[in-house]
Length: 248
Image 1 (cartoon, rainbow, N blue to C red):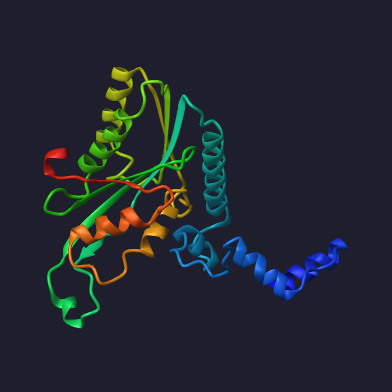
Image 2 (cartoon, rainbow, N blue to C red):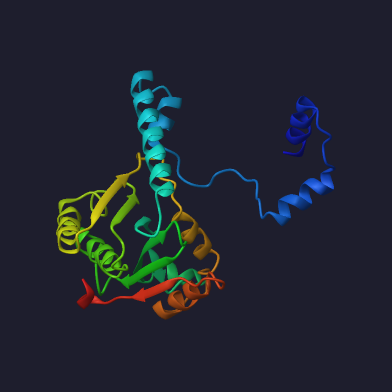
């Protein structure tokens, strides 16, 4: 990357910084250079291998750009009366989570984390439960999202929800009906934006990435997850809600 930087400086007529200075700035700005570890888009991978046509691929890219532009416009519109949130569910968390090899054959408890990230204030609300209290159906996610929206200040007039297009999570009639009912009762304008499948990068993903650094083994119980999640962002701690079956 330093070689690319020097080449760019030469083309622009600038004097390139030394390798030591280059590395120092990257460290100070907390910039890491690595290959992407996330799953790649199925449509884009299919196009690279020649399994879909150019026309189908172009439509996919157009939808991706349209969704991203709508997301940027929504974030830009955030103010004291308009709340813009991104929501997503983290991968299933297992308890206990240990290095012991025999644990692989043991029955483990599945834990679920539904995260809400407000883009303007950067406040994060986490709804955490395990499989004995709730499943991962539209009922659970709707309960969490409606609870979050109901607890917003009464001065809020508009809510924009940005998410992926997962059917049982964000794109179903149960959630839509609940949001419609809330909008009528609170006199709100609620809008949902769905990103294109395979290109659903959102601000809420940074929360899950941060948490991954704090929930490494050993973890013995559900309470260990809750404690570590609360410690994941010391300067502005996450609002963690441990919810039970009577919440849904």
